[in-house]
Image (cartoon, rainbow, N blue to C red; front, side, top):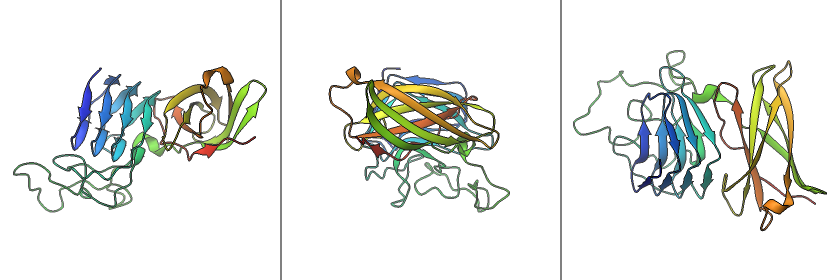
Length: 243
């Protein structure tokens, strides 16, 4: 807690670690702000900005499950290519705030230096699905899909954000909604709402945010979805405020 991670391939790397609580830190100017695999890890209340990838959630032999909550994540997607035993020097790697399926040094797709004197034998590196299926590692967090935001409208009580989700049928989910002043993914935590999916795995949600919370109305809104077993999705696509 309360550390600053700056200027690395991975600001913080957790390999197959379980039940770590990562909170109140700053991650900036790294290829991957955080890079992790393992189960039961919680990433909460951090400030994560100015990285190529804010949080890289990696596949592993056993399913990676990470709960990502109430972080300020913005201005990631930078062109940073550090790649010593972590990070990535792949110019085409997918960038953003939360990104699933990022390769690390044990994966065949990894582009970078695997470490001093590390030269894996051909065929020994792990594959990320769909490469090499069925002998491959599945997407982390169960491949949970991000929610879809449909409307963000001014209402008598403030701003109401509505959307839809798709997940495991007859299951409980928590949607966290964020406001952004510019191109952020989650600059300002606005609130959360609990909802259920139906027998086909579909669900709806709505959250009304008191207007007094805003010094100025956000430019855009985003959301994440977290399942009852503690897996959080990537960010939704942003939407802007409509009258």
